[in-house]
Length: 358
Image (tube, rainbow, N blue to C red; front, side, top):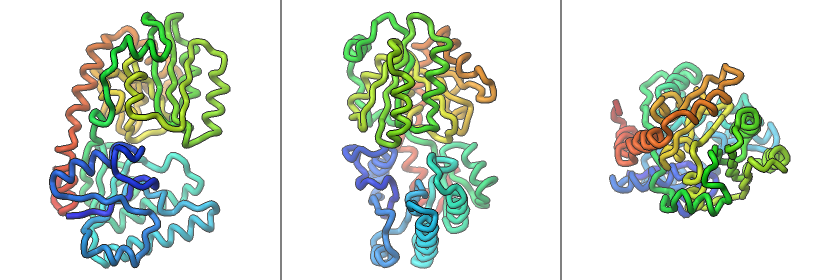
């Protein structure tokens, strides 16, 4: 069995391709089951789709917005129309269409009505949909009117994607952090929904004299937001900003091993690879009670704070310091070790073949 897999616009489905590890790790696990995922261009034509039908059985969609991006609303609408025609023809050609919901909506939404229409469209034309948690499955039914079974397939761990060999002492030495400091860590793409400015505000309110906030920011997505954060943190000795367009996977361990706790204060979130990454490094996490987070993070693995509480983030950042962080870190690691790709690949295979996953 072979599947055309629509992943990131950048070509490739390998950990060497500088893409989100989810796609490559799923591809590796499915390959062991003799299922080939092939990275596919979002501008594939109907003629190309027809020509490839003899060799491919499944179209697996992920982030829909790449199908209908346009510099103007007119361009986006035209692209959306091509997308609708593509899916309609794919069904007629006999492809099995599968969609995995990663986000409630795209993080950046120049044309929000098209985002909603695209998800309604796919829920009309797909043969199967998958979600990473039961909350996300509910969104598919309630907001996008999917009326069939939702296959709840967890988000797999990223343990195998990131080396973890350096010691805490070596990591702190490399980053210039005192051994006795209490280190809060944020890492990820610099995007508005990540809530980094809110984290800086909370840190300045509650941090003790021994506390340091480390920000590991990938700046490729939003240069303006990165610039704002650079201005916000400039000249503040206890806030350390590390910025790059790209961090190699081997670099992550210096930040995660140097820190005591990861704080990821999203303003909107469904699934988070960053949270799963932190837990895979054996880190306790502080996260908002949004999306899949309460299903992923329990009181053994971290702190889930109430976003309706204006001081919820501050309370969580203070409270986590009084908890058994080593034990929480071990529990976090154990939790995500259970999100193994072999089991996930088995569930995805059932979806591809039309079977039930539950």
